[in-house]
Image (cartoon, rainbow over all chains, first blue to last red; front, side, top):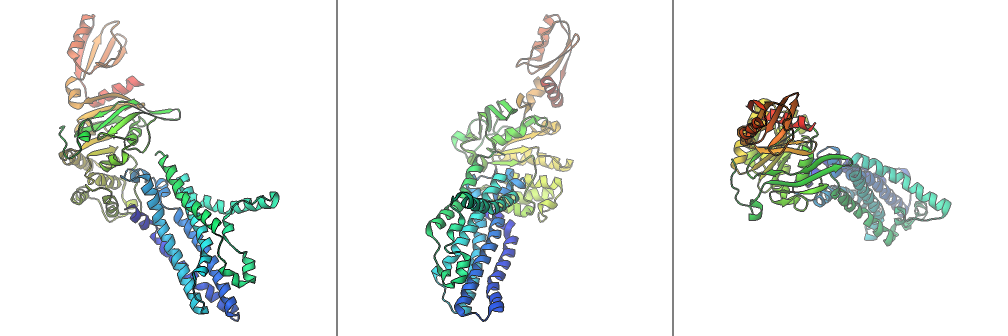
Length: 243
Length: 305
């Protein structure tokens, strides 16, 4: 029931994001075709593929934060928590159902964008889709899943999804600055989601064959774990919250 | 009006519907509830009276597991509010003081949402109360008037098939006709099922009309808890003239007002005996008057102040 209610409240934004996702999935091929149609097939594919990877990451990050800002945190913002929390369900059920309802939409969006975009490029350039190639989406997807989970957690901490969204945006802006500063001034390298990307973008543009480089396992698994821990922390926080 | 319950486990069938022992809640330096000892019999209607900020809502929140007591304990339907609160919620319907619900959902969708949580849900009750309260079931909640929003809350609570209804200011924003319908629904339908009704209010006439028991709370303390029948038959205001008469309160004398040589005693039982004792002490008893709930409430509150 709560799953249905979460879907009922986010379905409009899901349809809007779906429309944008399909549009953006088609765009890389059209843009590269229009601007650099005389490129060799291999280079054309690599550029269009990279563009697809980054546009999908960008859109899905926004979608992830947007979906993360809904769910149980909004029950507090709209003052409906008193109604929901007097239903005979545990906090764990409510937190994870809200998270799952949004995660399903988010993953459906991701799947659509990746499959549509990748299939078009594969057909246009006659390049077979391989698991190795599809793995290039992994860092972006983990990153957006992380932002989704972080927004969800920050929304619960603020008791307000919109504030969670703003706080997550703040983290996304400030965290890399802190990391870069630490590295530049004190030569300290802290783990960052950027570690999941195997090759620099500029390097990839120079050597298109690098697009199929597999992302490093440890940072990817590590940040995926962090993304999944966020709703768990949200659950622990809510179990200690009093209305 | 008290009746026997059927269909529950033996342990949960016996004993009061709600019992609290020295229940206390503090928020920093604010004492919302202080050592509350409540006893709500099964199958009864219990009016929980108090001014705004008296501690009524804090008490209800603790009963529903929405907030944890600072000390003391509470049990609802024989179950501990801390360790068994999901089981309590399965059998308890609640109407909040703040009548906020999902703004974009219609009452029909809210029914659909709520139905899945309760195996005892009654769709025939939905039809009945939607018609009785004249609720526009297809209109979004945010577009409903305050009165209709309250009615939706009541509809959802009454259709749940609960053993206990906890209602926090249930008649807020309702017109007199709907209040009448609600009182009828509570007194007839809910009690026919053996349901216990515990409702907070500051509308004394509503409590007087349907409640069987009343509890007065002020500054987080329970000032008095009694059967309404006992209040009518036993509670008396004794006015006596004299000097140096007793001015202490006790379980029999709930409050004493002194004005020069005039003493007014609010007596909970054996008013005749107490008047005779005053006479023996040299007092002139000028009147022994019956009291309404309002007068008792005001006198107890004044005593607290």
